[in-house]
Length: 72
Image 1 (tube, rainbow, N blue to C red):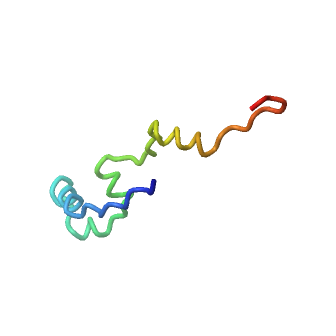
Image 2: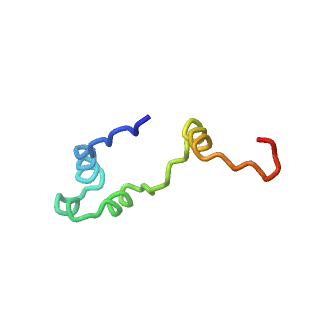
Image 3: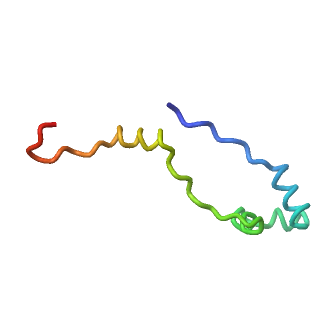
């Protein structure tokens, strides 16, 4: 199964949040880094956890070795 293609960045939503909700001027938005913009919106980057199917695929692709002397 191939990974999903990347989604386009939601520029309209980002501009709306920066210029509307945050009250930034366009130059403030374009001068900010993505991390600064996310912080201004109150968002912190957290890694997404594995879903159960992803975890099962990981287990299947990297099984634990059998202990020495076991009948596996």
